[in-house]
Length: 296
Image (tube, rainbow, N blue to C red; front, top):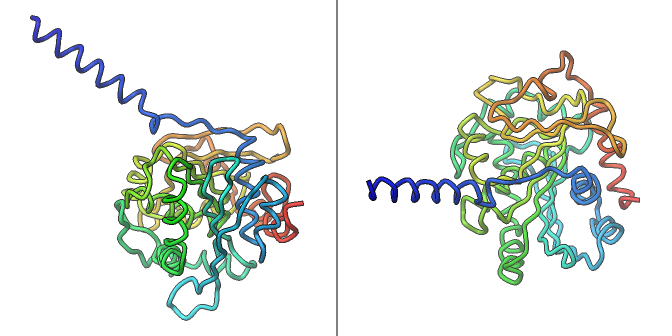
């Protein structure tokens, strides 16, 4: 009887530890997504991200901006990202630029981009186009910058963000640094905007297990979060979706859908999801134009 009681105490304590594990908890904050991460994502569209950073963050320091060809397939599209330091926020930033122009948006939507997949380090498969784009940026200097910043500021969080194509690369970046034990999942915060489906169901499951603070913000009928079509090559979003229906003005209502599968309570429940305008505009701002203008 005494052994059984001790076993119950042990199980209860173990369960409590799991419940209290900080990686199991995360809360979406509209103010953080709107006023902190969104400017960081928009800044990636600028040829000088420091302008946005200086406008929104005290003592911000751009580490480096990188521009590379997105993949080795002969396409002319350029992918871009930057790393930065926010000392006052105790954060290291990794931000990825989204699509440059409508033609690239359509090119990403082309089935060939999603039919070719590659194995992912954390599990499952991802679009080879997205994977190649991230890996090329990572090996072009981002790896060195991130490792150096983390070595110098080991207690800082790592904030990862991006819009559109940049959202997919941000999702991969967050997963990659956790899978490689560069930092632990409880120190990573990921918020993306208008992110397309990036990988297969096993990838989504693995991603969900890596970090709790992971949010995909979607705007009403934005077409891109529904690309490729659900079920094509087993593509599935990881959680959690934050859905703003119609308005994204300050004070607008939103719904957080954190189920493992995509929920019809959020954007998946809409009959029509084909708006390019909703994709280009988040929090009432044209994302790329606002970033290019210095976030003012």
